[in-house]
Image 1 (tube, rainbow, N blue to C red):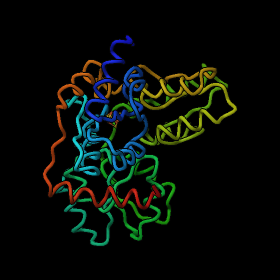
Image 2 (cartoon, rainbow, N blue to C red):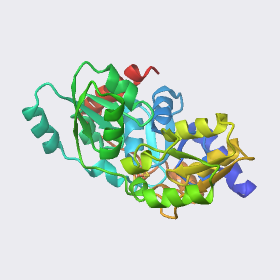
Image 3 (spheres, rainbow, N blue to C red):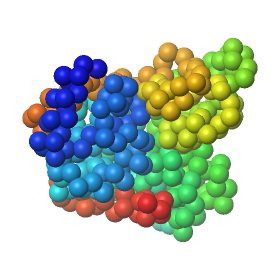
Length: 304
Ligand code: SF4
């Protein structure tokens, strides 16, 4: 990155009292200029606690919405307003109402990869790093898990004492990681451990030596004595894996481990958003209030 660009970003950040939050799936050069880089859980905690006047979010829209809901007095700006997560739109309010009618005691557990509107209908939110802990802590036995089918099934496997109703949402990036391709990667790199995100399909998770969120995968690889790893999640994670482990080797399974939405974020857009403080995340008070309760409950149950 040019020094001039870095100086501009730092100057604008100071002028606007802005903090830059970036997800592990955005490009490495964007992660490099962020104040905080992490998974959805970590970034939502930072958004809830920051003293900055402006939060610039380098990620997809549901992340910016969560930041706004948790810090409504702050100006939350997206680096690219078109960066969106298709999975976030894979469940509708009517479906939740239907399930609630059919199962009056059900707890609706909503993956943070969902719109603010869907969060308003949830009992609690979860991220991939805290889902098992949070669902375990719920008094309800029946769980309706939305929108991601694969994460829901993974959580259900860990908690046989609960009864799950699943939805059919999915992440196209993780679902594109095929079992056969992982087997081929293992044959090509027999010493490598397979590290997988729980948004992958069950037949891929069966091949994994470790299953966890992006931060879980980074921690595992960093602490491991092993030197080689096959990574079953979005490619943006390779930046942080490499930063923390310059002497270890990380292999992708295929070229489709790529989230086009996350990759919309560029340094030029970061500069533009800092200059204009647009596009802003705007949500109405009622939605924010209703969506805050399940997010706050998640932070409480996951143990901030
Ligand atoms: S990687 Fe998947 S879940 Fe994450 S933002 Fe992209 S499409 Fe959504």
